[in-house]
Each structure stands twice: as structure tokens, then as C-alpha cells.
Image (tube, rainbow, N blue to C red; front, side, top):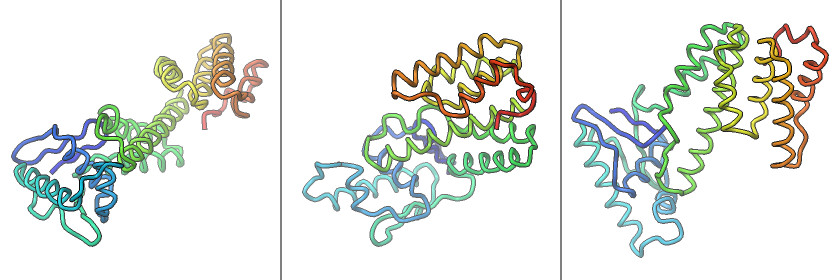
Length: 256
């Protein structure tokens, strides 16, 4: 079986693929996959499925949806015991290589370790492979309960952390031209994430575009003041000052 959470929810097996168009089934599978390998309680699942308006026989209704999901997974070629009943709820088992989330975590952890070891070329390979696991907005449209929404928020943060670290590795390798447009896009998409401004400023400075680097700082300052009422963080201010005086330290690694 293959389960994919990092984008539209998708499940496939030896007998085919399903995008799961039934909303309650989507929410149920997503919730069980987020907690794969451990028990998700019936109360948690009922809250996720119906929020503040559960049906009178919510436990029985949940059991019906679990049975339907078991049949779906079996029809795709999955094992009959993929979902087991465990007090006080249900547990979904996944094998190694079956869940895209696990692939992302393995690759990003490897990339981080390689980055710490300053093996930047290899780090980029693993970090970019981790980012490629994402297929779009995480679980877009799959309910708004605490399990799904909490996971989506966490997964987006993990993706951005991975993106930032990959760009750091590119900078360490001197690939300034290759990532400049990527960083411009990221500062537009995530205007409150100061790390992307810092990286773009450094890349522009090292590309002999000092004036543009200073403009990026002013842009960041205006956004942060307008949205949060804050000045840029210390590292951004320090980099700005270094660029103003063409500090030789900028020729070293300030990307970490």
C-alpha cells in the first residue's frame, strides 16, 4: 500500500488508486494516518468527524465508517487487518515505505545531519528530495478538526524549515544565481519569515547587487512594522549593517 498525506489525501495499492471523495472517509483515514502506529481514541475521531454536532449514536456511526474504510483498503489490495480495534479506539498499521510522511522525515533528518557535517552537496540532494515529497497544500479540503488542522500546520512548518536549510546549503556551495529567484518568490509567499529575507540579502550581496540587498532589508522592515509592529530580528539588522559597510565577513558563511 501507499498512503500520501503531504498534498491531497491519496491511497493506492496493487489493485488501484483512490482519491477518497467521501468527506467523512477522508477525515477518518487522514486522522488514522496522522496517528499511524498508535491508537487514536474514539472520542478523538468523533470530534474530528462531527466537531460540536455528533449524531446521537456517534460510536455506532464511527464503527460504520471504519468498516467502510476497511473495505476500501482491502479493495485496493491492502491487508484485512490494516485497521485494528484497540481500546480505547483504532490503530492503523503502515509498513516501511508506505507513508509519504515517513519518507519526508527520513530524508529531512538525513539532510540535516549532512548539513551539520558540512557535506553540503549531499545535504542538498536529501533536502530537495524531501521537499519533492510534498505535492501541494497538505490535506487541502480534508476537514477542519484539531487532528487534521494541527498536522497541516506542523507539516507546513517542517516544509519551510527544510526549504530554509536546503537554501543554506546552496548558499554554502556558492549557488547564488541559481537560488535568487527562488528566494524572491519565498519572501513574497511568506513575508513574515525573516530567514528568507536574510538569505536573499546575502545572495544579492554576493552577486554584486548591494543596493538590491539593502532594498530587501527595507522591504522586510516595512512588512514587519506594518504587520507585527516589530523591528527586524537581530541577525537581519546585523546583516544589514555588514552590507552597508561591505564587511569582509560576508565573504565567509553567514548563511547558517
